[in-house]
Image 1 (cartoon, rainbow over the protein chains, first blue to last red):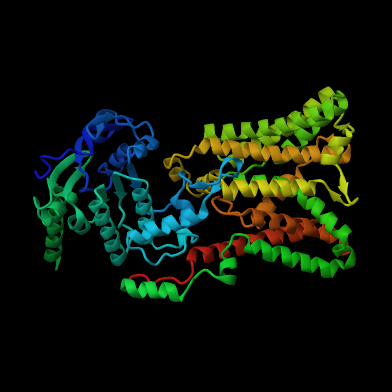
Image 2 (image 1 turned 135 degrees about the horizontal axis):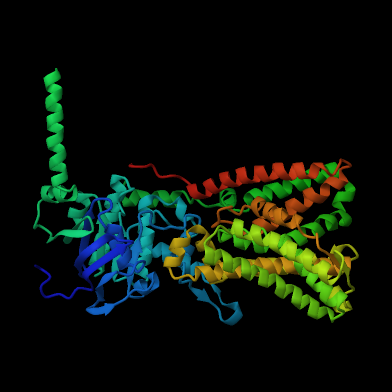
Length: 271
Length: 347
């Protein structure tokens, strides 16, 4: 492994999460390294969402531990996770469609000017900072921080959310299906932004269905099947076909293929 | 498309200017509405509507609704509803009249008790809504009836009738029940004060940003560390305080309180807020819009008396106006979301 000498920024040890008797996550161990992209692959219901929610403090693990920079930590709330520099960006990015870019950028961390009773929201600073941070990620079309988030394209919304996380000093950036709802061009832009975040030394956890996107930016891959970690490998250790097979649940696909061939077989017979 | 041409395009077409900029603001529909009804009733009502007396008649109505509407607007921008304001108004009004009228305690004791009672009902609303996670519509509908019944029952038990008279001391009378120039209620001044405070909170403090965020997406708002439940409870306490303030004003003006007062304020405040461009599901709206919506309401409510027509038609006009407002506000919101020239998809 290439990570032999490095220390993981975030590591899960034998983490399980049980919901009312159902094991959504079963004994998963995972290391996340700064400046690397970890791709989390898996079918719907494989436990990716649960894993993300455990990492971002929405759920506490039933058993197992999470360590940040080698120190065992318990996230009681999303606030705890974000205090440790773990930021999560969801599929639709900026989630306040009817707020301005500047305002939504600083939700929960509003910049103020003045003092005492005259302390007030610094709109100019908020708008300028938001636009500048997005520009640094290559979004040049946006020049006005007063524009509503809802007027941005899907990729721009992702960019605004990622820019926000980067601005507030995220060490670990969790991206949940960032390219799923995007066109080809927009998706490549988001992948480019992921690479920029990685180059800044941020650990990126990319959740995706798209093997091509994963292979383009990923340094490390983990495949989840039915709550368990089915495979865990570094870039170049598996071929695209092997990964696709794993994600599609290999055996299940083989069974289906066999079934289909008997079907077509019988159809041929009728003909 | 290369980065260069994108930048050139952005420079060549500043998308937010002048009229198109105005049309994208939440209060644009309300501005059109207010100007339209004012013009209409100025023509239909003539001189008496446009002179000082005419202005006073609709401003007085608008100011009482407006105080409540501004605070209800904050609740609605945060994604909740408050149907209990009417009962709260009556209960606070009655609290003041019983304490300072029936029991003869100083007026200021009655005023403070009335305001505190309004805040308490608001806190109960907020506490129940945040603890039970039930829709605020249902919770405040329940408290509306509970408070209404409790006010009626208690008043009958204590006073033995459904109305209580009181005379406020001169200072309280001047502050809450005076007529400026013999025409304008002091409620107009209170409305301006509340408008300034609410605008400050909404636009100039972090709490304003939180209110928009909670109404926009409560889960994301919570994830950023906003104390969502505390903010929602505080907003309900605000609308309770607003209702109580109008209760105090009415007690001072009418020299007493009636248990049945205030129920019209429930829907009137919501009409003013929605006509003013606040999104019913939360996350969008402006104080200027709510003020314009309230003015529209006041003009229709009073203007009808100047036309010589039967006042029954006022409700019909208000209903149509509400429908038109929701439809046009939807259009303007879509315009705001389109954000100028659309980029072609997959270019």
